[in-house]
Image (cartoon, rainbow, N blue to C red; front, side, top):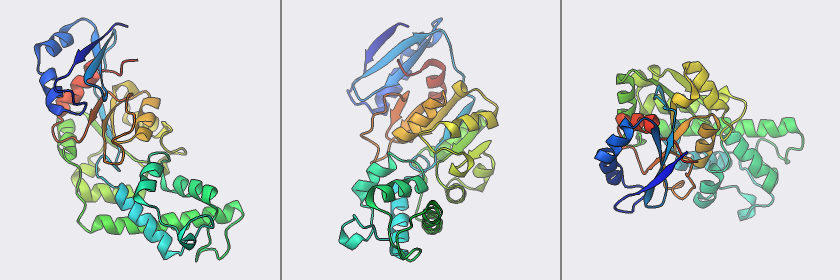
Length: 313
């Protein structure tokens, strides 16, 4: 496989103006008309790596993650977890502040980018810091059943608290998301949402943020409840491709974190990243494009990417 590197100007890895000027240039038009297809990888350097391949991909399905992509939600989840810990007076023996559990912004940024799903987050934390006392169990639970009950109770209360926050009307979708969804549907493409979060909380988010018409118009909707393994395991995206009836190679995933990126690429799908403040410094080298947000990204841009672009190996 041959490859070349095309410098971008100005040297800004997230510059949409640089991307748009290249895609509208004669060079890009010539590449698209060439016998082989060409694949591009936007990285954090001031260049665009291009590799030639003998195969092409057609964008048949656009798949969105929810948290971090459709809405910037991690600070809301952190608030809901801390409210749950306070409500049940959760205290871990190895924590500061007399054991009172409260996840800081800095800690949660690391945690949520390493472990997908609320229950796995808490299980990992309690294993590392000691199983807590609470109003659920006066003494730290010692058997698997009681530990599962503790986590289930905390997660259920946290989910309801998160719903209250979403229903408050203060949360808005990230820029460009609704337009991209509408453009995909108008182009006759399949549209899906795949989230590692609890199904009830994702449904609430989607109903309030993208509207009932768009939500019911989805061709596939999967949440963490629908698969045995959470991201970065690729199960949710493999399942989505089967439900959509399309090849994984003809799906394009929109994610915001390395965990989601790994899940998408593990399923054999290409992935674009729209990062958040808590994921901006992650290594997205396997993504085919990286954006600060989707405000200037058109569905036709994504089609061009998948038709002519794959991460240079």
